[in-house]
Image (tube, rainbow, N blue to C red):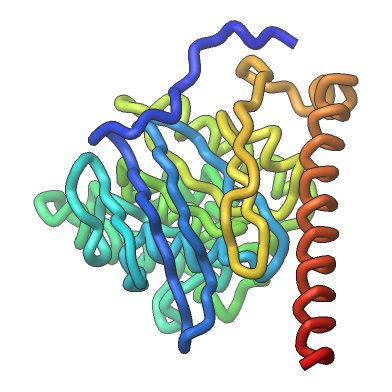
Length: 283
């Protein structure tokens, strides 16, 4: 595959998201340990790891929804101390107001992010993004009238409509069928690639193929506690054609490389637990 296209570099500057020596514990139990990461403005980064490795917690820290135990977090040189309209989040649980229609869920969010606009502009933009996610006919329906997958598409439409420079996405396509999953992957890539300036995306997934299809760079998190065990630049040129790419020897080899690194981490964790258990029994 051609890998000569220019990509953002992982440089610790004041441009973009910066994570330094981050630690997070819950009730005294370490969840994330010594995370150091720089995400350049305009970069598409996937956080890849098994369930329970702290991916969602890390995303919530970036969103300003949790308070780190120690370390530093910043966006463009400014500390992240709470939620901001600069950083939009797609959660796993849809987070739509059940008493409002889909279109009103979006226009309400737009009234907060773009208070200078009128109702007609907000309504047109909301309908535009609902059409993009295939929900034009469901715009006036309430969340309880929709399937989980449709609700998630509505939540994605709301986040994309906000136009925030940073998109934080927590396994946003987990509830979708394969057709809509591929469709929404392409939509997110289109919004990311065509925005001026290009958006910064942090996308949580446990799906290796999804990460390799979407990302400029994959950051792999091991578990117990969560820590970065590897980072890799995805070498495939854009645009990436799913059918051609997923069956290529280069793609299959990289997928196996990533899977093997996780297998090694799992074995190391099991061995470490065995040693601790053996030591405890010998006391």
